[in-house]
Image 1 (cartoon, rainbow, N blue to C red):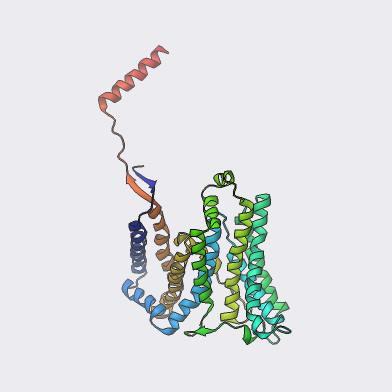
Image 2: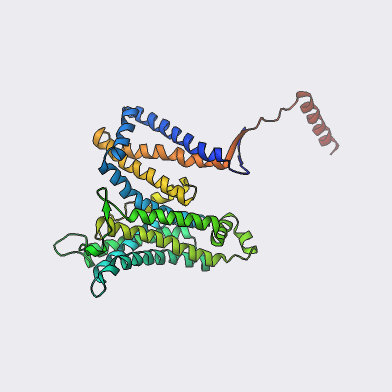
Length: 372
């Protein structure tokens, strides 16, 4: 092929700034083509999406509501992916965090001081998420069991278990599903409508993880393991210990996402506590290049696309499927754009074969064949 990718020796600041901007421009272009083929005006549609996400306090509140679990699960996935542990289980870890936080708030609220209920519920959510991720981590570290399969399968176990709780075991009297509301002392404060203070957990964690990855020995070890596990072993890095430790922290962050969803938003365990946030987090982590601070901006963009995409159906009278396809058309070029940040595209001219030299070479081969 005349075109070949070459890995850049170093990523320039210019590439870091230009590649995302150009990727976003290509995303808008591809989305516009899809809208034209669907019979919609791209400019009007984009303005409707922007207005739906940022044109009102309600829209901004909904963007923040969706960005909270996306930031936390995005950080959870990014920390695992840094050492090439493919944690596909953030969905289940979030669900188990929501289950544990609900149980703690409902059943531990009696006999404990009221001011301890919220931190105990948050801690329970983190512990549950961490333990849920710890199962595939131990299997990987001790038996080398593929983590992609185990983390993915545990998602379904967690979701089915939570459904059993809010349909049967913990179901509030007189309801078809859902638990009793948790005590008010465990609620997270709200602002701008439904947005809640769980956003500050995500922002603080992103900053802490950025500092850890940049300045600590543990962050360096994760980078080495992810780059070359063999070299990490020769350097004396304990890979099994790092797998277990990293996944416990990764799962705890997803568990925190579930806990703050319950304490700040639903205030009870309900059906649909997780609506694919754990899977969307995989896209967010890769688009952010596994950078914790980048996760904040990408998660906010993703939340804006989700909220704005809903306006396509309501304002533009377009099918719901158009909104989903448009979101994919906007995200795929931005996700692929990361390739051009780390690799450069070169055109290599194929070598020309001189006619005389080619015939002489052919004659030589024939002569050689005759001698044989």
